[in-house]
Image 1 (cartoon, one colour):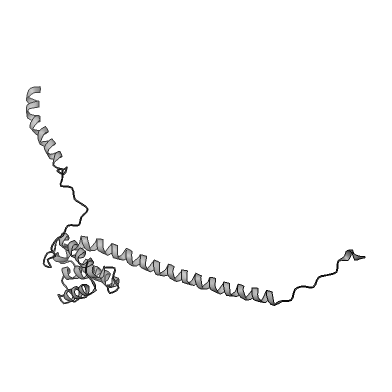
Image 2 (tube, rainbow, N blue to C red):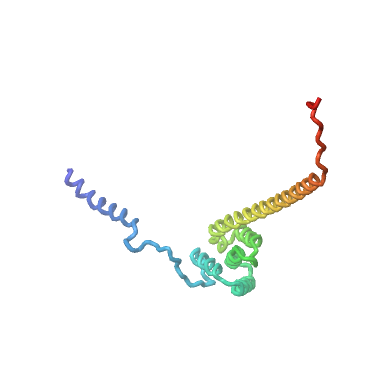
Length: 183
């Protein structure tokens, strides 16, 4: 009876061990720190392709950025074009428009078509990142304006202090009183 039970459970045990080992990577297949270079195809809608496109536009110079922006704006308003345009506007450049990128992502997330639904998870992640960056930029601007106001107040107080010092120096010295001990 025990022999029969061991004979039946041994293959299950071996299969369990093999299934458990399948989760561990084979030596030498760990990802490296170097970015994977992938070709950017404009008809691919996989998240990997979208992320590769984001990496591609991050490396563009000003002329390439303007060319890419013009090309995508001429493609229409399909969900993939909206996502690419939002990624372009998400770039930390002077000619990128963070508010427009957020508006495009809002429009994409409101779209319930199957093409747009496949982009929703990535669009949500990018939207959170852009909203956080917009909030931090607004806080930074507020802090900079407070700092400037503080500098102006310090300069104003320093001017008043300098004026008071000048007035004090221009006053005649107080006359000395005769001492009362001279009787």
